Length: 367
Ligand SMILES: Cc1ncc(C[n+]2csc(CCOP(=O)(O)OP(=O)(O)O)c2C)c(N)n1
Ligand SMILES: [Mg+2]
Image 1 (cartoon, rainbow, N blue to C red):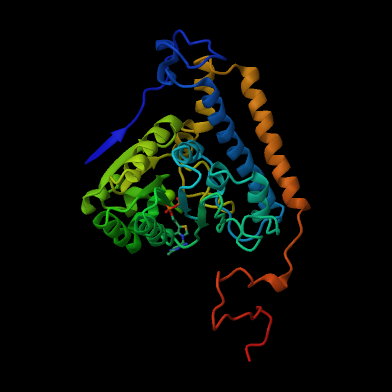
Image 2 (cartoon, rainbow, N blue to C red; image 1 turned 180 degrees about the vertical axis):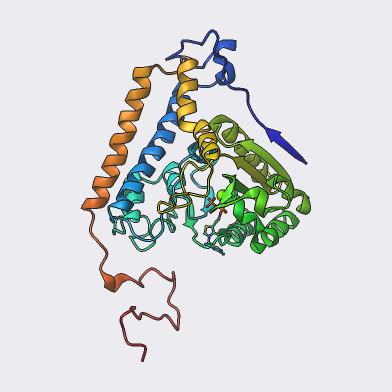
């Protein structure tokens, strides 16, 4: 039932000098053998863009341009990009509140993602959702949920709808390690397995739920094994390895698409910063912080690409400049966008009219 998927790191010897060409060749290509150099550079660009975007988001928060809560994907860039490359545009994605990178990698313009953080009308949720509540039907992103585990029954329901209508879409339901102890996790996995629904549950194991380690909170800390309770297929993958994540996710998504049923994929990575932008993470030891830094997927992928000859220093710096410019442009777009009019606060709460739809603003009298 369960297995682990890891890949060897590229060899330092005889790096293939294929800046161009159809594939990284030979043993010198190491773990990149057979991969398209173009695609590898594209992954590096997207991972770097997410890194730069999140850095700008943190900055915007400290400048009070962004309100509410703000959780970043720092350290999870390889997981985000690898997972999203396994999905078609028409596949549906449900995530927790740590979703800026997912929104970008699912195809939403970074400017619209930043505008949502800034609470502007050009944002994915017209500025009323904020960091935790991105939503874009066209891109197949059905949220963005602030309630831990809130997305799991909804994602399972979406998979039931696909199955009922006979569609070929697959649902991916992302969540954190801390979410696997929520009741809804177990209820939804049970139903998904019973009814063989086309959904892939993905646990982003960054080893922390706020300040609590997985070992302290989960009796079974190898989280993919929880699939066994529902006779579901479970796998663990190195979440700092974009190709390993892409390959594992693609396999499980296509398995679900062809009627093979749901699966649970656990991607293990490190959270580079605090739980949210305002968390200084004082509860982490110096060793733990250093271990996280060593596992930085963006820096490591950069070094591996250079080592394998897929990129040189100048090429890497050029991609980094481009990503920085895109993140800066997203900020400029957000900053230049209008604030929503308070009178529109309730306009998008329900898709259809409801009888007892309260439109009372906080300062309004109750009676
Ligand atoms: C039902 C519920 N309980 C508690 C919280 C407060 N809370 C927000 S995030 C979080 C930790 C979740 O950790 P994890 O699932 O590992 O996700 P991560 O933040 O590491 O991505 C908690 C307890 C909440 N939002 N919802
Ligand atoms: Mg976590």
